[in-house]
Amino acid sequence: MGQDQTKQQIEKGLHLYQCNQTEKALRVWTKVLEKSSDLVGRFRVLGCLVTAHSEMGRYKEMLKFAVVQIDTARELEDADFLLEGYLNLARSNEKLCEFHKTISYCKTCLGLPGTRAGTQLRGQVSLSMGNAFLGLSLFQKALESFEKALRYAHNNDDTMLECRVCCSLGSFYAQVKDYEKALFFPCKAAELVSDYGKGWSLKYRAMSQYHMAVAYRLLGHLGSAMECCEESMKIALQHGDRPLQALCLLCFADIHRSRGDLELSQLKLHCLSEGVCRSKGLQRELRAHVVRFHECVEETELYCGLCGESIGEKNSRLQALPCSHIFHLRCLQNNGTRSCPNCRRSSMKPGFV
Image (cartoon, rainbow, N blue to C red; front, top):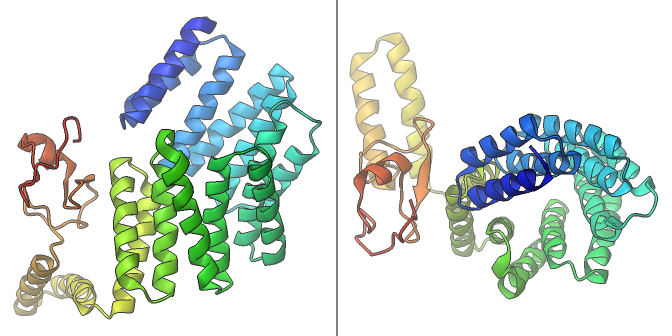
């Protein structure tokens, strides 16, 4: 596979990925790795694979491709490629909570000679280093790194980087219990998405909404927290962003706990009790807990409106519609309706499912 064909296949994979056909995109990129002899093309496709696996939460796979990418960068003997490769190694270790390794790779990036891409990527290096310091609870060093990343963003008019730094600063101030600033920075990120993010991935909006939800909950504004978290979860479900889905679920749980919602606690109680009674052969008690479990599911609407199965009992792909009702993806695909089966609004756009 030559240079032109490699480039075409990379673009094909990107188009599929942007259309949420992630597995097809991965197959296209993997085939490029197998057949292409173009080192620059291989480096680029490895970068695509690193990003895709990061957003799917497959961090060990992310690291595997980052290691191959740095080997390719060494073959190319180009400082720009080395900088990008070491940055992806740093990000991969950051995701795996190997914070000392993250900092080491970031320092390697900063020690490389001046490069064409340096002015853009060094801000991202500082951001990754700040996240690692925050993971180690080294707050002063984390803040210094975030401020440095913010200066890079402002000096280079890099609004996407500024958005990401603002979200990280939201996490920073939440941890040091300055909740007003914990809200201010993700709100700033949301403004950047609104003003400049028309061509950006929706993940930036989802990211800012999640951090706003966390801050609103800590400030006791639970209604606003729920709205932001629902918006973030809706985007995460649409784009298969499993790490963000997990964060949103934790945030939902914290919101319900702050509200004192006993229904979800009861649901967990009856589910656990059902397992205990089943193991001990207590049939009468088992039936009582099964009945109450399904009553709780009905009351909290934790079920698919098409097949009736409770959501969360099995590892199934879900789909949130623009009206915020959630169904099993397979049920929507098999149903064929163009409106929400629950509220009957004309909210399912062509190609939405």
